[in-house]
Image (cartoon, rainbow, N blue to C red; front, side, top):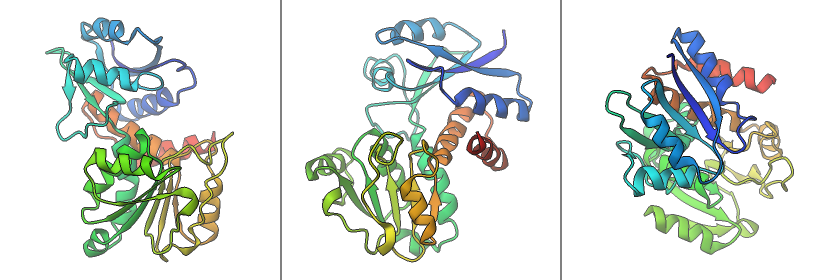
Length: 285
């Protein structure tokens, strides 16, 4: 049987992952496929037990509502473990399967989804500039946790500010990650002097209110990264571009995290031109 990976969730039919991964498989000449698999709540354990015995299964991406459940099964209850160097966020979005040993390894490729695009943007800066960055992260949930962990390693020495609806949410995030930083409520925040703004909240998403922050006072070469990709052009990104700032959209994160998962499934890195091409194709859809 042909090797395969898949995305699990409920619902899952809307996922863009099959388009992304199957495009790369075709372009790279890999004889494998990627598909969707609807797994209902309470059935993740049975799914993993069945797939673990399948030598054709290379692993899965995990979406709502199973990320915390998969973490519990793989990490807490010992069905597998975290990959080397992985941060412990209490949730995973990728499981890689070794068909020879049956080993299952958990990852959170949201980290690569953040650090990949930003690393390309920051590569144009001097090392001393990267160490002195002032970074503001909006949100205090799982996406913010992955972003904070990844950026603390990409930009050692950076000064972090976490903005949330309430100070205690932001403070709890910093304490949980063991990363020093300052906290502010979104309502009281100023972005003056910031080098990077990363929106890891649902604000600006279709059906949600916009993020009530203006990047106008940020540093001249600031980067604004919005994880939201529906709509692709959020109010925050539109304003940022109008001010002349570099803007990174949420599709870039989606594709970068998919590239990280692809390599874990199939053992082949995705060349950057193919990452860019998938982003462009998705943006046109």
